[in-house]
Image (cartoon, rainbow, N blue to C red; front, top):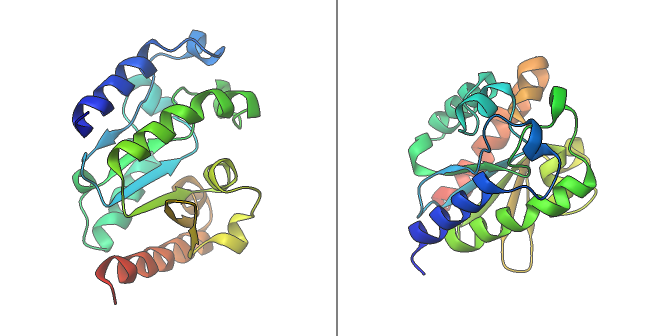
Length: 185
């Protein structure tokens, strides 16, 4: 099946999903968006309040910072695919429950398989632990991890970088590591 049709099929399934209780409290599901031929798929934790109201990923303050970080390495937001572990906002932005992750993860796995990116960028601890396993962000950031058929790159979540100036500097440095790898330098 062509990538764009598969991603549209996943989007439709996500927007109608009722597998977990989050479907009852969401305003909009947030399947993800971006280039269907992206070299990078960026994966966050879960939609926030702005994402829930718009149905689009990373459009609040964290999204603005993420766009700036991408531009800092010569990429436009439209050239990557952006999504999250969870496709619905947890109440009060609480951390995702393991049961929610387990139910939502197949959507993400299908998105990644359809796009077949060069790298999957994991933004924060929830993304890292959900796709790789327990690994603290402070130990993992700026590093690549070779999975069975994917190469992951790990860094902080933009929300953490907004709260802590030191984390922002680390994240900027991490994105430069990613840039060098993208360029093959």
